[in-house]
Length: 272
Image (cartoon, rainbow, N blue to C red):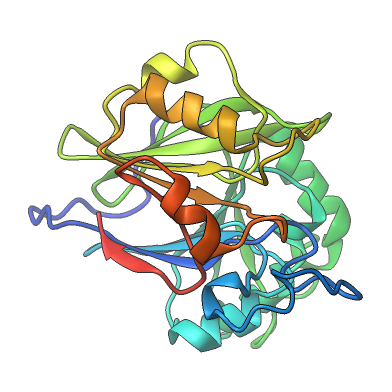
């Protein structure tokens, strides 16, 4: 779709507010049937739902990915309005809350904009054909408006650029958010390698949120060592680790990180 504008451009250029809806890996934390130290932890920062973020700007509210915990996340954070949803890829822990979006397009004429790359959009249409086939446009049903991503696009005053990453065998991207000519935020919840010129494109971003699954190596996710190398190469003002497994305990492991790098937790919110 190239670089397109979804909403009218106001003159106000205030900051965006980010909320971590979820910061966990695909199985969440605590893990079913696990008796490890993290899964038994009473620290609320060690209770991690599936990874997603909410971004609020003066012009629009959007979510990146809709995991299976979406309903509970929205209730927890009091989210009652949503203009658009962006998808990084079509793995189950990032898409299976899709039908919960019905509450944001409940009216007979209400729709919700869905942004995804071609392969991800096709996967969504296969999994949720009832929403895309045009036969269920009733009040209370989800009514998505397809927006296929083939380059940068604009929502309000935010320019959003997909950046390819390597993450197993599925087409996956992260997103760079720019406002007022500044690289404000980059979000990469699932990645092993940032492809091509992605690292250079991200240089100087103010806030970097990046996959940091655990300390040991993983075939499709960055571990702490790989994530810290990416942080050093990109040089953000602040960095947050997300998509965290139960091998990581917040109070134990965050002090080991360098200044400016934080382990995110569900419900963490800040102005970007």
